[in-house]
Image (tube, rainbow, N blue to C red):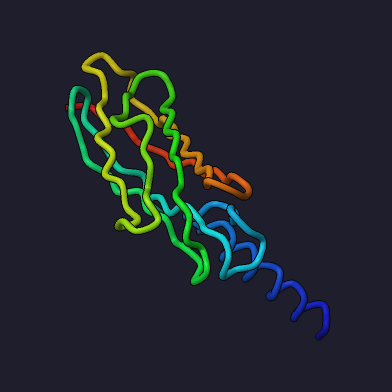
Amino acid sequence: MKTAIAIVVTLAVAAVLGCQSTSPRGGGMAQDEGFQIVVPTSAPELKQGEVQTVAVSLQRGELFKRDVKLEIKPSKGISVDPTHAVVKASAKPEVQLRITAAKDAAIGEYRVYVKGTPATGEATQVEFVVKVVAP
């Protein structure tokens, strides 16, 4: 019985962690002192040659009041604009990314890497997948 409960708990934890769409905590180790980067949970689909807007946001701890510099790097075959952004402490914690799939981009999955570096404290990063499909 204990083994069955342990297996169920382990599977539940694995399922929850596998569905995360946020980065590890950055800025500060305490939950209310740090931030996380939130990206799409499901892969946006772009047709070859298409442009799509995707939101990336910061989830700030209650005590986290610092600017965060974002650096966005796409894998080859897609492009992202902007590639750098600053989310001010006093501003809305969201950045709209314009993702473009090249007209000759191979059909498949591409990654977008987002790194957030606060004015002081630890940086954090996360990635998300973008699917390129036929027009």
